[in-house]
Length: 249
Image 1 (cartoon, one colour):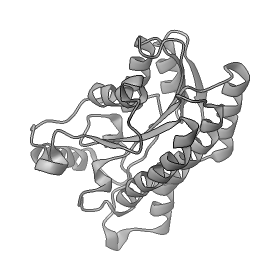
Image 2 (tube, one colour):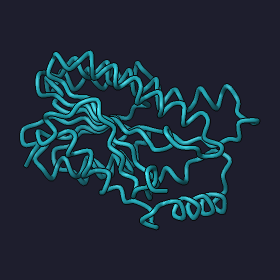
Image 3 (cartoon, rainbow, N blue to C red):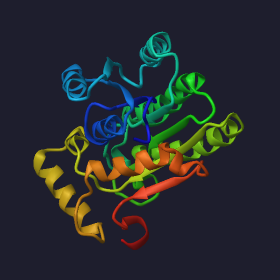
Image 4 (cartoon, rainbow, N blue to C red):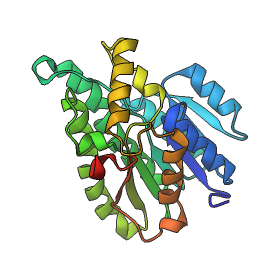
C-alpha cells in the first residue's frame, strides 16, 4: 500500500501502460484520476477502478489539460503523483516526413507532456513525484522514427532540466523508457496496415534479447517504483524496461 491516501493523476491512463499503471496505483491504495482522448475507454477504465474519476482531454490541447488540473485542484486539493503516459506513434521514412507529421507527434509526446507537468506540479508539495513515459526509440536507430525519436529524446532532455529545477522543492522527476511493449499503440500508426504492424512486431521481437514483447504491467511495476518512496533518492533518472534491447540487442 505504497500509495495509500495519495492522489495520483495518470495522463493517458485509459489504455496500455497507462491503464495498467492506474490499476496498479489503485491496488496500492491510491485515489486515481485518469485523463485520455477516448471517452469509451476512459469510462471502461474508471468503471474498473474503485473511486477513480476520468476526464476526456487531449494532452496536446493545453486548455483542456488546464481544465483537468483545475478540477482536481477544486475537488482533491492536490496531486501527489503525476504519471504522464500519453503518446502517439508516427513512422515515416525521413524522405517522406512532413511538418504535419512532426507537429502531430511533438504536440503530444513532447510539448503536451512538458506543459502537463508544468500545470500539475503546482499542486504538488514536498515528496511529490513525476514519472513520464519515454522510449528506447529516443536512444536507438529505428528506421522511419525521426519525429518520434526526436520527441522522446527531447522529453528526456527536458525532464533532466525540470528535475534539476524542482529538486529543491522536494519533487522528484523521472523517466521510464519501455522497449517493445504489447499495447494498443502498436495498432495506431497512421498509414500502416495490420500486415505492416505484424511485420514490425516480429522485427521488434527479433531485436529483443529476451525474445518477446514486454507486457504493460511490467512497465507499470517500474513506474510505481519510481513514483514511490522506495525511489526517494532517485531523480532525473531514465529507467529502461526493454528486455535488454538497448544494451544487449
